[in-house]
Length: 629
Image 1 (cartoon, helix red, strand yellow):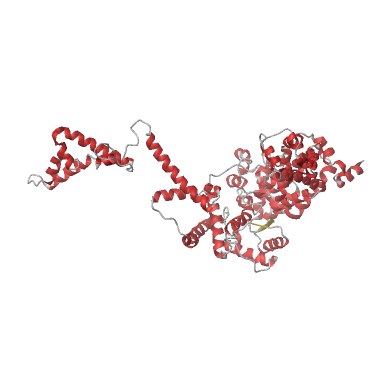
Image 2 (image 1 turned 30 degrees about the horizontal axis):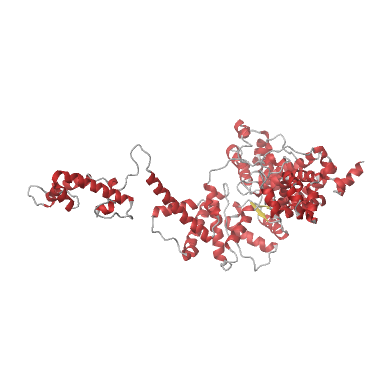
């Protein structure tokens, strides 16, 4: 049998299915038997399985001279001679590399495990980015710790039992944050409400918001962000009237999106977008030309989604300009000119547009024009860094960038700045943004700080609220210390790091000599200016409540979203803190944020008005020019 398992040919056929470890052990036993057979006892030892007969006889033979203690010592000595490692095939020799067979065996086992996971992904149509979940590797580690034979959770357990356990876990997580709400605040997902059976007027919405405010505690709520619809605006104002400590503001990202919508509705921009649309439709609907374009070196897709739908329009214009030489090479190439599609009406229109230099100049001008707004939109739409302290400065920089682009020629920049002013005055011109701008040390201690009376007035109005300042005299004194750089504000280290750490962290470090102002600044500068996180919950709802899963009761749907969002927030807290401040400096740059590397401009800034407003494209600007003449 040992020869059969060891694979030794001769007396018996070798076993082809024996594991490598067992074969190695059998070979060792045969070597021992062969060595003992030379001393004359080989045949007898082999008959008893290779055991030493003298030892066996000594162990089982009764003797009055050997007590129990000596027997036990003899047994332990014999067992000690057998090392546990001898039962396994040697993986490595001391000082040498692993054997090729051992490496291949481990590699095959790893590949088999990965293939099992891949089969599950492919069969269940699980998205590949699910492997990026921070809970993916811990799940594999937990399975590995249990070992083979573990049976996964059943359909009912995932749907009921485990979901309930995860919800209770998240509830404990939320309760654990309650102690920090009054000091630094936090972000949690509380609940969703099925309001399909109620009229969503201002009074009803105010009641729904008030329930959450009362649950959290009105003294712990600083800021409420709502949609820009009329009923939500009215509800926000009612909340602000009801609770003196709570501020309300509209969704900043939506306001900027509406601003881009106004830009895209201007006649010359709409005409430019229409021409660009003709190009993309023609190229992407004829694979023969799209294939030719994709073979070009450094090709990137023209159509790439932006932060919002209207931002995508301007990003596409910039991407088309980046492919100027590729498109021009296409329409003059024999591959295009000899094709029958080039003779069609659509083909002729596309060819004329691509070969029109004015079209490319306009694309570049509009891309530069909208770049500051696009950058600000990216800042306020993020949910990882508090952005409330950057809205006021961002809008100012965007307006100044447009003015500088037109060399401060009022007739040229006025149509655009009027749109910005209209949206700013209607939605975002609030004391909240002005006060946050005042309390942001990155701007206040900068030489370009806008010291308008309205900014200072907004900061004083906050101090006049007893909820934030019990002692107005002391509050004004601390504000004066902040302005004059006295006390802890005058430290050299404090002035050095104003632009390298987040404003709320700066206040926590260097405003110790002004406790009232410190508490107000930390609470205000820790706020977001958009409800992007809540907006993204709709994506969670859409993934969970699909056409095939449309019979989920509301409570289970709410539990799934509650668990999903709070687990994401928990993971954000576990990440390594990022102290990279918001890149507000690049807001007033005149290159679009989608560019990956600096490229020299092809259009001189003095020629913009000549190319952009050709053929009386903007009546307002042209009429202003005529009046000046």
